[in-house]
Structure formats: C-alpha cells, structure tokens
Picture 1 (spheres, rainbow, N blue to C red):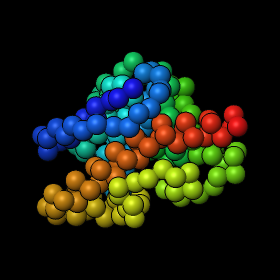
Picture 2: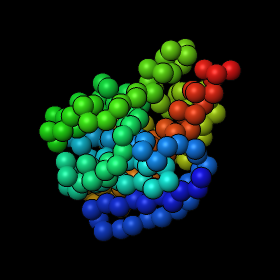
Picture 3: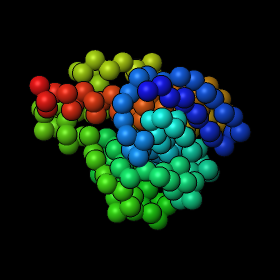
Length: 182
C-alpha cells in the first residue's frame, strides 16, 4: 500500500511526500521521540501506515496532541521504547502508553535474532538505507540546540532524521518477521 507522509510542526509548515510500500495493519502506530540534552521531549514522531506521519515539535508535543495522533491505534511499535521513549513520555506528558496500547519493542525482537546494537547499526546490517546517515541521537540533540539559535536547516534535518526513524520501523519489523520464518 502507498502512503503519504505528512509532517506537521509548530513552525506552521506541512510537508508531503510519498513513502515506501509496506503492508501493515492500519491499527499499528510506530513511535519515536527526540529529546534535548536535558532529556525533555523535542519531537514526537508517529507513523501510521496508510494514514501518514505526524511529527509534533515542541511546544506542540503535548499529551492531547500525542493521544490524538494515536487515536484508533491498538498496537504501538518502537525501537528501545521500553527503556527510553515510553518512560520519557510518561514522565513528561503524564501518559503511560504501555497501558493504553499493545506495545512491541523491536529492540528485543532483534536481540532474539542475534542483532544487537542501536537502530542505525541494525538497519545497516539488514540493508535498510537512510538519507540521514551519520546523524545519531547526539547529533539530534545538537540539531535541536542549533534550531534554538535560529538554524532552520537544523530543524529540517532533525525532522528528516526522526521521520526516517519511524518510517523505517515497519521495514525493520517486516525483515525481522521474515528472518524468523525462514
């Protein structure tokens, strides 16, 4: 199925483009957050195959807008969300997404298949390409700081990085599922 990507953030811009072919239930949401060096949420990215991608940029990354973006989802997929994304969201926004959704953490599914390391390393091992190669979590925090000092280009790159994180999760999930079958 083809899906359109929609990125909405607080600077009042909407960006649309086409995504990859992925077969995933429409009740699944893929989530990833970015944070500042102080661990406060800067971006909440949510990808819904067949529905698009929403990126909530601080100060728009609120409890209400996050739950609205997840409306209709039954299943939530993350990479390392058990240890990072979900506890940070619970602490900052006061909502426990683990109790609201059937949560599946791809980090542990990868580890069961002998794939260890961060998301980018595992994507590389499985042949999943990124346009933002070389950007990692530390760089994301630096990009946020640069955006705060007025660099529009830094926010653009940070949004592309977050979008790749969440849009690659269905691809990673499919590759892990096919490895376990074969």
